[in-house]
Length: 221
Image 1: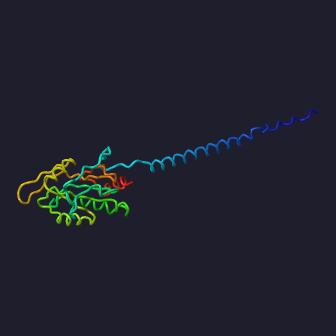
Image 2 (image 1 turned 45 degrees about the vertical axis):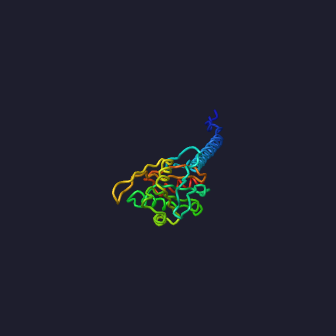
Image 3 (image 1 turned 30 degrees about the vertical axis):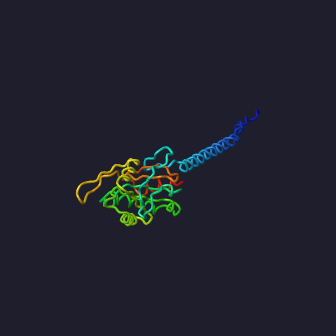
């Protein structure tokens, strides 16, 4: 009798070991993907850290010292000496005390900006308002007017000829109106002299206190 044929068993599972290299490759790919994600996150964090400050004002190039204010007097009676503000940031505003709108608005904005700075930055920031209306703005009146907005603010003015010289050096226009209760048309920009004594930045009247404070903090370093 012929022996029954025994059915062939299943083929040897020679590729059972294959999943192990595949798992290893997946693990390597996962590690690589994780490293890439971490790298991207770190790069974005670094980008946020080193992102340059975007100034709200117009930054002026060069290192020429700001024009002097020879002939002008501070509200306390002493001559204006910009060199005395060494290592300070000086905001300069040309206006007048009887101004009905832009002057008080700008000084209020500057006051809020100063108050939002750190104490060290606040101590190194000064506002100087130069009156282009010396006939009505006495030094005593300027002291009262500027301190109304902030106790650290200073006022200054001088003889008409001296005011004319200083305004021309700073590129400021002004023109007196007519009548007893006249107004004065004038450049309403706010200017900034950096701690090195350089006229560094000019802001439009529309600048906000937040923008102003950010620019000042950046320029103080």
